[in-house]
Image (cartoon, rainbow, N blue to C red; front, side, top):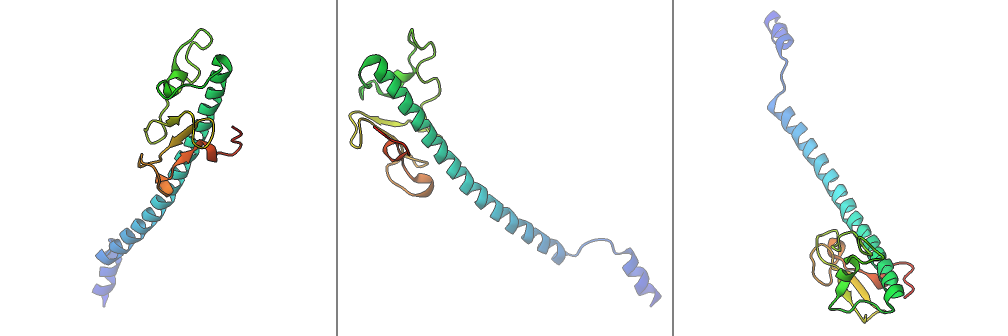
Length: 145
């Protein structure tokens, strides 16, 4: 009996079952956090695309005021980055790629307005849902073209 008490007093480690339970719990928690963060990242990128499209629309309005026309399809949005006397770094100084690294699509004259600007989302292809959802200029709040 004395030997049993002495054995329990010196036992300081964890059993394999205890370690496995802790590992499984940590894994489940990591999965839940990862899924939640991924949803927020997708939403954040979509909001950035909406904001950038609004900025491009403002740039197009300024281009129209100065040139009495919108850029042609051949000129595209790249004309907004060209340096001029009035704009030393171009009308838009930032990159004209969406948060997924794809070029924004510019169509003039537009099908849904004076011009159309579209980001095809994460997959870079027309259509899609969730992360692959298209962001369109004519669907933004305050689109008064």
